[in-house]
Length: 257
Image (cartoon, rainbow, N blue to C red):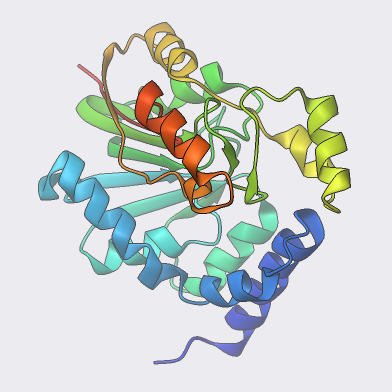
């Protein structure tokens, strides 16, 4: 069954503004087209969660922090999960309403102030979001607060030690100062404003944020293949990842005991 025209048009407009205008990605059209199959593509993420947490983790109530335009929520619902989405972007939430016209459980709110009761969720899912928030510590505290005891929090975010910037999809130097980052983006012909919304996180930052929220049971996973090893510098970057043990992304499961 094809999706409604209003949903297709809204999704295309939203991601065209993101990939073409905000990030200046040359192949933005292909990325916009991929977003039309967002729910289907999110099935891989669901499979990853099942591998790490077990299938039973998706049988409870799930909160998707930074739900975007709702693809993960749709895929999780099809898989039988009861899932709620929250996002600070009004346009994204409007698209979620088009995607799930009967409701589907979406709310507009900042990750630092989740509008849910303490211990309401069995699993909190946060993919490629925490690097954008105003306060990592407050966001983690809120995610812990709304997770029940015995529940889990899954966080996936770019690693500051990697040689790749996953939003701009560019080779990147670890801990590159933002003034130099802006200069680099200009030299590559890219818009620079979005860089101000990004933070480069490390394991230590996440460990400290969870510890401040009273959670110390953390397990980190290294599953993503470094994308920048496919370019001209693949020999050097490949050696860097092999010798350092660094993963391009941070993937962590926290358990609230």
